[in-house]
Length: 318
Image (tube, rainbow, N blue to C red; front, side, top):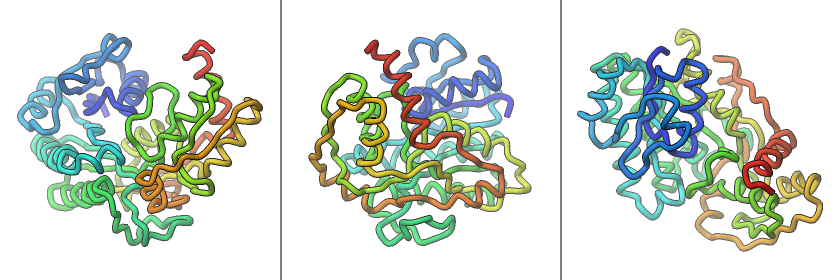
């Protein structure tokens, strides 16, 4: 990678990935793509080039690619799971119509493309424990349907046109930097904020509901590793399971209680979030990622909890 465009650079993952890419490849070589109304601010705006890059406008994307001599596109434009269920047509327009536009621009300009998939690409009939790399998916949400389509369309452009498409299936991503924005796994971020503030946490996910999770530094590492991987070694491309940790609400609560013994949690289950959570894997089998591009996470639940609490204490001034 030499010149990189991050589409969706002000989102939960995009805002942190853009900064990390600039650290690794140089500030001027990473363009923060955004849409009007979601402009970059602060360090993201000041540290490198920014450009309007709306996935629904292929001409605009093509102009940015040509102007900055882009060779790699990170496409992070998407609605998160819960929001997508309330706006299914918009979710499809951004996630699939937008991807088609990006893949066409990439085909014409010889760009590599990373478009992440998710644990949301799996459904209730998927094996939930150590979910295989290749298995039945059949999701029941528009978010999941769009992610499966993303995987297949990316594969199609690779096999049909030779576009260098690559992806990982992200677990739920936990971060102290960007507030959660409408995902099923958001409770695992919110709980840390409440713990640091000293507030009781009302958990929307039922006790005993395990979900696959990953700490943001590991998610960023995976996104960069897969794009640097030797293409001759990649069998699956779109998209690799990656795993880091799996826990239920009681387990993350217990991990926090080690540091915040007075912290309290009660349950008020959200039916929509719970139904989505129950359709997702407990833990994905990431053997293929480990074998094909040496994926290995750094953080587990305990080390993530310690870091989250330390960083949020500083951020919130508590």
